[in-house]
Length: 170
Image (cartoon, rainbow, N blue to C red; front, side):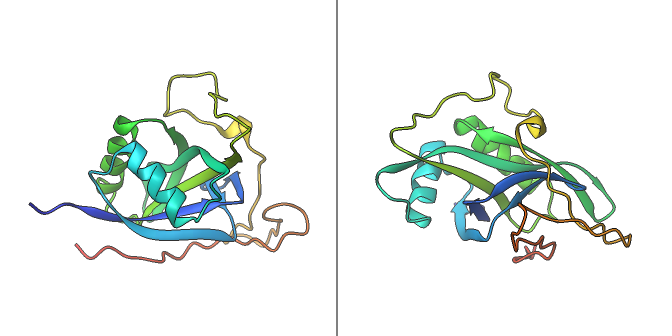
């Protein structure tokens, strides 16, 4: 039996921002690796923990999936939702495989020390919700205008990259 796999790019130690593309993950720290589509939520958490080489005294509080909500030509708009269980992981892969122009699955790991227990910070049981009011808005330069604006926190050298690292050939 042939299992489908996907590249997963995990951002960490950064920010979740709203841009002209919707939700954007911003970080100078990323790790990309291949994942089998039949992975469980627990296995995904363990794999991310291992690949990011997270200190044993830390844990992943949340994994956010950058989810395309619609496509206009070559441009996607995004939101994010928190992965909480196996059904969310299956939904993430279904969304990914139904959008073949996406080069990889994008996740953002929120890492905390073990003395900060995870909790439902959003007060909702719905995962597919716009979390934009909880994150600082970061503006980026609009490539179609001469207006320049900052990206990331003041004084940061973070810059957006819109070029895919991997392309799927299928």
